[in-house]
Image (cartoon, rainbow, N blue to C red; front, top):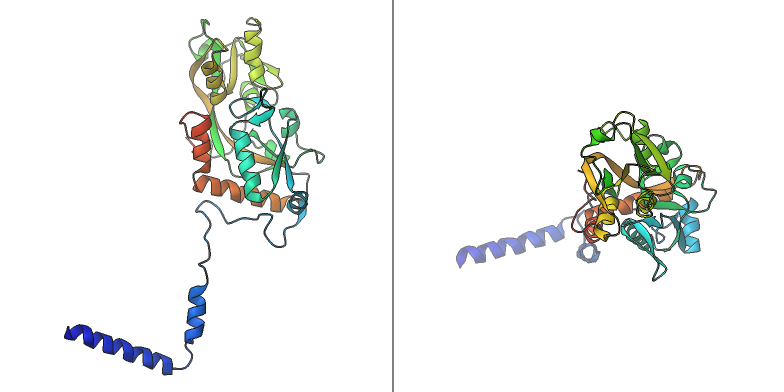
Length: 314
């Protein structure tokens, strides 16, 4: 007991001495500091970011916050990333849920629109929508007309063929025709013009003499096969989740051919011609970082891609 009592006496003496010394915090100052909440720290992958509650927001972000709505372009026929549920009349899918979460964290409602993908990646949106959450792959050419956030997910590009096809390997596609969506990276891959970011894995070269035919969106290729146009093209190149979803639906007699041919980072896009969109791009980029850090993107990927986490780069 004696050592403890001695320590207590010393502690009291130290407190009295501190109170008598000048230049220190007064008890009232110390209590006030302790009563203040600790400053919140941002997730490791991003900053706290701007929202509609932030002071002194400007530019396009300020106009969106004043309107209370952000206009988001997406693809109405790109399951499971995005599609229109004909029974409910509502958009559904991974991209749709990502866009809704971004809107909620910004503090605004989300209004969807569905322009052609070719119009989205061409830029010059003429104020028809504010951002695109439509599985846009970042390429050097698109960066000339669009601003991008960090990727919110990554997908493999996959070749599919008819289930009863004689094609057994990628090499068997030499001199054949593949169907792809217009202005997609799958088209660029076939044409040999695909230019992914420097940190991306090198794509598998397309087979010699492979050419492309296009439809407005990827799933139209599978629909053409289902309608009986099986002689028009021998393969379909699309995102692996889209091809797998078509197979799992039981509506299409197709199968995957070989391994993925490249892996693509997909980001939220903005029209670079809008010269005051910096605060919006910054805000959404920070939100994407937060959604990575807090597991939201992993959870949404798990939900829509049956346990596969495409939010993590392969």
